[in-house]
Length: 284
Image (cartoon, rainbow, N blue to C red; front, side, top):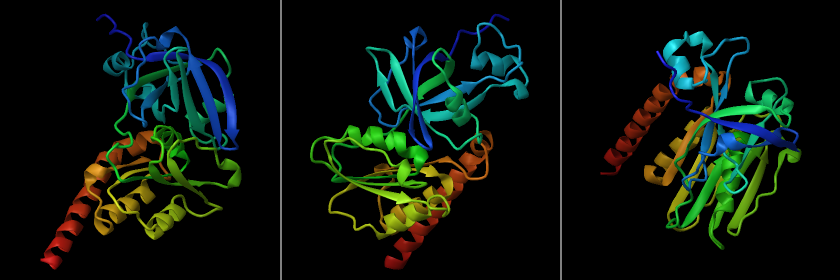
């Protein structure tokens, strides 16, 4: 059976930069990105492809072809990362990686990356951009959501109000956010507390401005779940005004999280529907 056409983009590392103690920027470019294009979202993402070392893959390499013809244990591992920036003229793609030493797969790769190294990716996908008809914006996340939050505030028009709450390990992990909007940033330092605990407290305390909010809440699934309940049930924010998702789950790797994420989300939606229905019944 002939190999299927190549289904990925191939970037070549141009340069890297250590932005903070836990964030590494990698810029890739080259002819392998000639078909790469974005569609206007500020949370565009790609799935980085990491083939297993020592495995003899079909040529030309194709993720779809590998999955169709090889055992699961040989399938390349995928990791989802936000497109921090894309310059179509220079054909350079910027991705920021959270790095915590040797933990994980993509972070250690970024720490070792050198000019000339190759990076395969699928995509891009995406689904969020700040709504122009929102009264104000709420952007909330941990380090994993910081690239998308930074890209989103850069896209805000002049004077548009946004409350931005970002949780990081400590002061050294803060980054400068550029925007023409009226952006009010609160950096929350974890200082050893569970991921997202400070974010949940801060959002629950926040005095919401007048007008319809458009909210972006992403990061570790546990705190995202708590904030979804707060925003949907307690604040009564309509679902269409929310972009909310658990990028990752504490204690499990990316493959394990993808395997249960659909069921996890279905359970959240069922609990949310029941809570909203109970509130309507009590008020009628």
